[in-house]
Image (cartoon, rainbow, N blue to C red; front, side):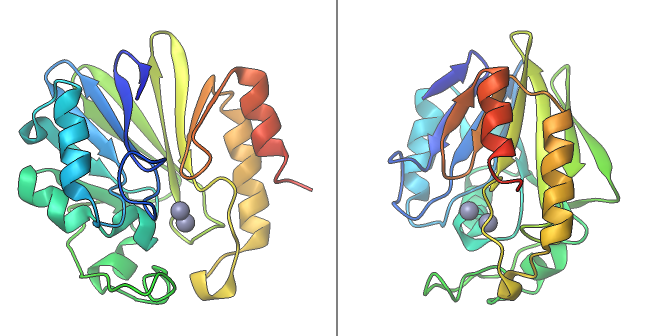
Length: 220
Ligand SMILES: [Zn+2]
Ligand SMILES: [Zn+2]
């Protein structure tokens, strides 16, 4: 499913396994990046969807992890078999993945088991940058849904595209959610004034006003 000429949805939303959160593919020049990896229950379908966009999985340089939850990370190890991509996550989220915390990653809730994997690059503090082809992807720390949740922002076809993933939450103590930080993060996401929001479970929200409306609906 094409979002701009450089951005595609390749997993979730009926494109892979039912439990998968959305997986997005970014291709710039000869390089590609993936945002999240799904549960791992249909990695072969995700790989096929990637190939269908004309991208060879070996071109994937980065696997950008928005947060540790199993529906976004269960497939990381399998995707790494198809490409030698660098796994990038926030430093506050990495320990749950590297030590495979079955509760905080919600794997237990899914009745599944997360196998640990190495986070090759840890984004520290409030912001970071990832260079893909000739483009900069901004990483923004948005704690709340989980301690080290991150959003990614880039420009494509003159539009600001925000990979916000689980903007909607939910918040739960077993996930170490924090309501106060969540509301602050939603306000931060609003301030980015994105034209397109790629969400983890609600699909693609297009238009500055619609994006604003969607994010605002979770602030009360
Ligand atoms: Zn999710
Ligand atoms: Zn989540």
